[in-house]
Image (cartoon, rainbow, N blue to C red; front, side, top):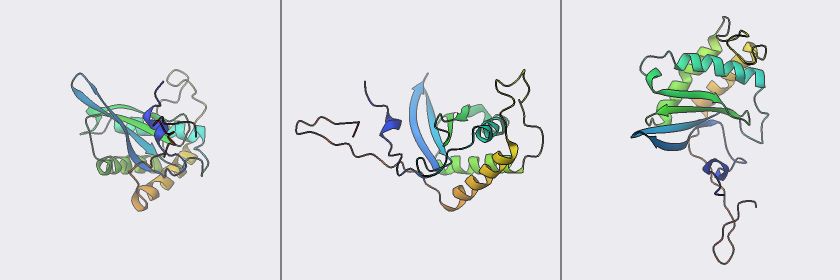
Length: 171
């Protein structure tokens, strides 16, 4: 099987930021997946599951209600490694445009002071796993990174080749 592109990203040098993970086409429409990386993988702890779950609920609510953007939002949700989120959108926006969108979204989380939407047994599959104070802390931390240390270019991984040109992916 071919190595998927996200496994070709050097996660030992990946910094928090916003990256274009992939682009696809569906029905003549460009679909762009953005890597909204909140922590440095393998260098910092991953996000607390209850905090990122709360961030998921709040940012999804924010994005799907934001005029001028909501019609292009397909998906917002956490990465399995808990170091960030994926944002999938119709069309293509520069990382700077998405950065501005994320600044608004994470300010919303940082300043949120009400019941987290979708946190009842009927509306959430794990309604007890939420942590608004920790979500607000992580939002504040990510906002500082977006404003002061913005990264948007993936580091690559050098893959060794043998004499015949065969590339090794497990080195």
